Image (cartoon, rainbow over all chains, first blue to last red; front, side, top):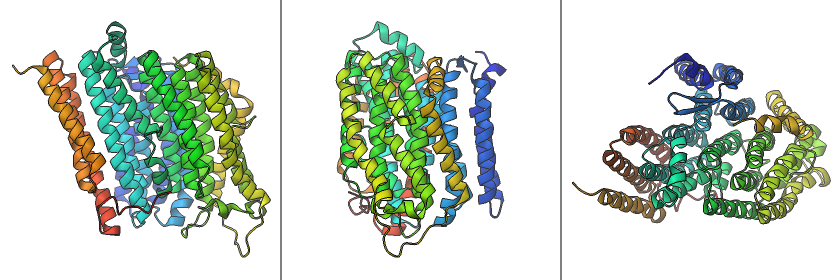
Length: 474
Length: 100
């Protein structure tokens, strides 16, 4: 057994955020009107935690006797989670005030969820992976149902909880079987045993069950049924946070378990490739017929999970680069799109239908331009961030001799252009409905949207920098 | 000593009962009980593997799972109560505001 301060430094963002969110919980409980203080403290905590990841960047290797993976890979994902959480928090305050649910616990729970994601991304042991996943999920179950008087929010929370716990059951049983087959829960040791005992059915069934459990979290078809309902019913800012942060965390775990730790053999690779193909096609096709914008974004989020799964299926270094780049790019564009909805929508449910966006460009030219930018990026039009993400992912499939998967992906994203551009057409080429009033846009929300938009453009113009960063991650 | 296969067989049966319960039953609380059955079947498998290989890691994982499951039930029952206050039902067929 060894214990040293290098280990503490290597996981300092996680340690800091654990202590900080517990303190925040006490602050929240001991003040009379804690919402605004919690809001600022949460932002400070996220910034400090993001700053600390800089120091962990060069601490490559393992910490705490091989339980925790440290260094560039977790640091990269920690930055993604912090950005996702910080943008959500910025958008949350005006949204929560509008919905009259501005309570301090919201921010604490959001920090706990972020902490769970960070733990997932640094899991070198299935035990740690399980704990991180549960910390994230349990916090998100509560956040999904945060509008307690709203039946929709209750329902979203219940569905998320029941199906999330169901998925946890699969994941845990998978962990149990893999443990039985390999005698350990440490991923690097499992990898070594795996190369010796290729034909152990217990290991295969276990790996498949873990894949099912994580597929629920990334919302891959056929495990996607909860996504549209949950994203529609949850508070909009939380939908944005769930569709980016929790998805990125599950992808980090997928990279650690499948693309990196356990080298996928031919069958497992093919299974993931089929999952990716179905997810891309079905997600995009169902998104075509949606009239509610949150539901449309939910199906689009399913489709984007499919694109990123292509990188996992390819299981080469280009694929990993693609997944990491895409998670960063996707975080900005998806939070931006949900952010626009959260800034515009009101308690009566206005701006939840796509038809409500008709003529928006005349009323709110800046917001409409930002929405158009996010839609173009989600559709994958160059030179925005979404285009380069898809390019790397599909290129990785071609280099892994799965050209068919790249073809399916390209066709699916052609279909997706229709429903993304539909929103843009509504905003710019439709008449403003009679008697429509303009909405007061909050400054905080607009700031977050502009940051996200700048990042989408910046990542698209200079993708080489981030790609060079991701290539040196392992 | 009872062979390891018996324990794993029992845990597989319990897991299957849990999965079928989640998929077929309509009461939110009973579905939740089925999920707990799935978690506990995994616990049983972990303990059996751990005991037969003489490695304590599996049993320690079970402690974590029990703690997590307790936290999950607290949140889950609170969610079900919040739903019941609004809709006066816990039957998931009647919880259908959201659909396409």
